[in-house]
Image (cartoon, rainbow over all chains, first blue to last red):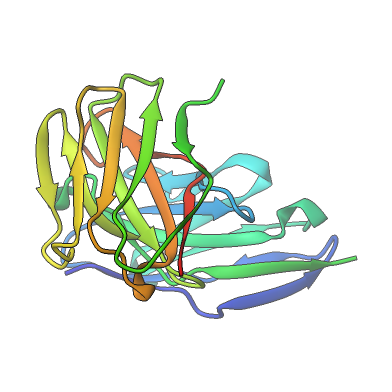
Length: 114
Length: 114
């Protein structure tokens, strides 16, 4: 069975600082990994996903994530935080034999201080 | 430009009074999903439709039902809402159930049970 752990339910950074949101997964088969962002009172929006190929994945809004199989991690980063990045971020995993069924982590709320 | 539409955005119902939440899509996608997201928690898949084929998650309570009368619309029926059913309900769509297919989420309906 697949699962996702997001370390830190709340992360606070200053505007312009590096954003690092952590995600670790467990999967019995090669995983497919996703990051979604949820702004207040809105649905989820896909930031980026890893399926196969290059392990460094670039997404929207300047975010990127690197799949590290040896560490079972898929951490999300952004070099310089903007106030508009304040939101909830969810890491999710799917396995090919699970079709398109996503298992989400518990989420990390990112706060950006001026 | 709205792709996945959920109405209403906020729904108030009484304990035990049946309620229906609506989702429509303009993407002509084959798959429609319903997720439940309780406060400060990850979205949890309730069920999904592939065309007219209904797929229920094993731990989805019987109190939750769904209907998909056509490609564009999907409804979530809660037969006897309890206080524990208060949550955000997210609808999502995808073209297929392959893991390559991105899920597109609606803005959600927040359900309050009095």
